[in-house]
Image (cartoon, rainbow, N blue to C red):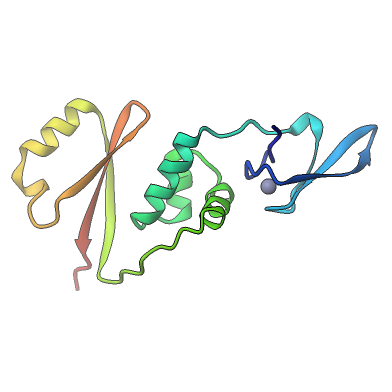
Length: 137
Ligand SMILES: [Zn+2]
């Protein structure tokens, strides 16, 4: 199975020959590329993780920075899986990336969970905590 190098979609079609090489077009993001640039599929783990972070209220750019995955890819997955984010104007997420031992220290301090709690998700060999806080006026 071949994938678009830009957005990892498999909806690619042949689109002429350029310099003796087969050219393809991605139907998801309209990117043109030749067979030499065929992309490697991103692990489904990161697709799930990206969509999870999207639902938690992180922006495409934040997800790009944290996971190292192009915001174009994330936008395409949101479209592909028809993910609808709940609009929430009263809260916004803040996040930290911690190691296992930092995570232990974090939870040992009551003020870190009081009032809003946190969500913990695995991120490679670290953990990400997402905390919701009311906008302060
Ligand atoms: Zn594409």
